[in-house]
Image (cartoon, rainbow, N blue to C red; front, side):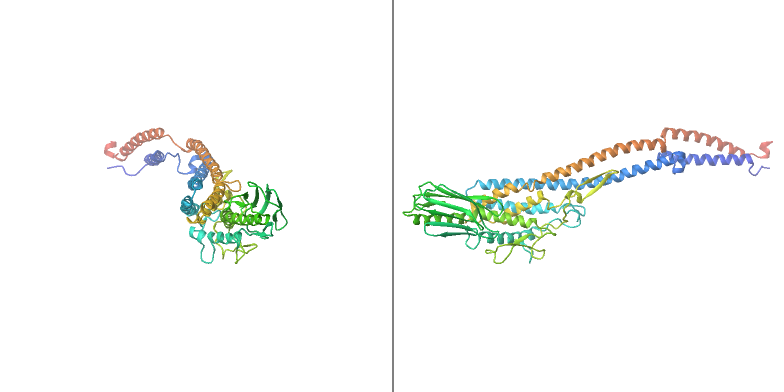
Length: 496
């Protein structure tokens, strides 16, 4: 008969087998995961340090995710800004080339280039990274700028740039088209008086080489000047009047005495008497003022109107000519969001634009990378290209080429710089932020590698060591199971 039941010795053997099986399973887990324990408790006294190291590594991963997102946004912003710089350079080159032509064909080409360029420029300013508008300041869910159609042509009751330029031109030219200046003849004396309002050309200074003529002024408010012919001047003698234009620039008008009749451009014929000479001088002065008004004044007026339009935002709408009528207006008035297009629709503020978007990239380090489309450098680019696209030069206008040259010389000077800032200055700020991001990520990689090695030394295992333990354990388990099996096969016959 067989011996049944499990004795104390057999039970102990079974327990040892179960323990070895559990140890074998744990070694297999260690081999597959590379971790010493599945729980912090299994690490003993090192569990607190391990928790701290894992927390630091997790924080570094979070910072790196932020760095990747911000780096992507800045890269998109730099791409847009690079293209803006290229657009500015291309338009400036076209304007310079147009100035070398003696007709209005170059002006027409420049305007066509400006029209396509301003459309692309506005598209770049409405660039997005995901659902985030990059040039809207803090209002990242809203486009930065209005559409090209609305900005140039208006939107219903809201006036656009073209309307403001036209209203300002009417106000600056005046009903007579002489820049709000009045020319009067008093026999042997010719006077020139500026308008009392803010519009038109203003008398800055005058000087004369005319003999037998007395120059008085300009002086007074409003300023006036006069030339009194006491006799006949000599041929080649001249008088020069300097005018201040609406955009702050200055222009000279020089009239030279001649014996030719008819006189040439900006010349006046010396008459038989002082009275006849004064009449000829008056005609030359009126003609010269008309040409100056149709060219330099018109260009300066457009620049000023554009400056006022693009200076406006949701907090402070642009200034407009108080009218109608506009050709006799004497003052400016504040527009409203209801009657004037506000070109910049993003967030406005007096704080630096870079501070409108910030990110924490390290425990003690943050970067600022925000941007507003109405920053001086960007606004100057938009403003000057839009002005070029707005002022139409007719191919049949005898003053067209001169108007184009006068406009282009002003816009080319201002297109890449305003208030000391340019688009490249914004890029430099972003490049600095990009450098901080790259340095922080490199530092995180080095720190993470060090912490990872330290953590591995605490919680990790050696594959070779675990494999050796598994082989040793397998040998022990096999021997134990064979012994246990022999014990369970023992019978009374076998025992005897």
